Each structure stands twice: as C-alpha cells, then as structure tokens.
Length: 69
Image (cartoon, rainbow, N blue to C red):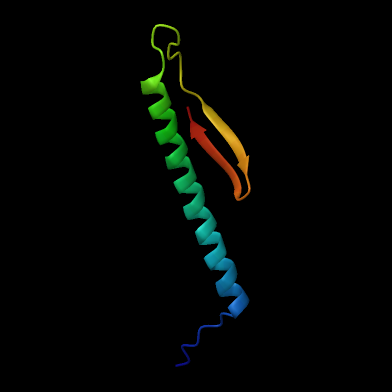
C-alpha cells in the first residue's frame, strides 16, 4: 500500500498563510470588542447612552472582519 502525501512546499505555505490570516482576524475582532467594551464603560453616561448593538464590517489589510458593536 502506498501512503504518500502529495503536498508541495507551495501548498503547505498557502495553507499556513490562510490559517494565520484566520487567527489574526479572530484576534483583531476580540481586541476591537474589548476596546469597544472599555470605551462604553468609560463614557460619560449622562451625556452618551447605549442605544443598540449592530454588526459592522471593516476592511483590513488581512481581509474583512465583522464585529458587533
């Protein structure tokens, strides 16, 4: 039985790059949500009120990310 894996260096590189982009996008969303929560907690509550949260898509250097803010 021949159990060879036919992956080229380019295939491995593409898969790794796609994985890193996905991880970066998730981290970016988490960081932006933490910043948003911090800013909401620190706002002047007598002047600014929280009305609603809605999804917003941002275009970044590594692709689109969607955050709910």
